[in-house]
Amino acid sequence: MSTLVSTVLSQNTSDVNSERAFDSLMAAFGGWEAVADASPSEITRSIRVGGLAEIKARRIKNMLQEVRQERGGFDLDFLGSFSLAEAKAWLMKLPGVGPKTAACVLLFSLGRPALPVDTHVFRVARRLGLLHSKVSAEQAHEILENLIPAGQVYEFHLNMVEHGRKVCKAQRPRCHLCVLRELCPSATEARG
Image (cartoon, rainbow, N blue to C red):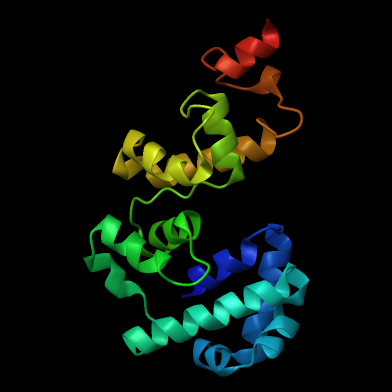
């Protein structure tokens, strides 16, 4: 459950602020049962540092209540026995959970080969020509998952995020430092 809530808190904010919000949530409530029983305004106060606190508070409360109602608790390990598609579908029926959040839970909590496509992964994959320009971020999850061998999804995700943060930046890509520049259609366009 920690990964699910952390991922919701990370939406549209920095890692530092989302970690602060998670730590503040845990300090305020101590566990998921207390968060699920808290009012949205109490949750909002505890996560305000993460931004969009009112929206995230409602999502977190609704997710926790739905998981507790359906499963009798907050353990998501049962998803390990589902097929990858079934596990994603189960998570994505929760309020505020889309393909990226579902993939984060499956990859980071359960070691399943679900590929989270964040802004960095999406941008780098498009620049490398792995995704067509008309592909949406939502469609990119399935396309990239089918391209990457299951045993390499975790490493691929981490490397793409790091490359996107340090080299293939959104505004000013540092193509001259890129180890993939000879293979990258975008670097070729920048050189030409």
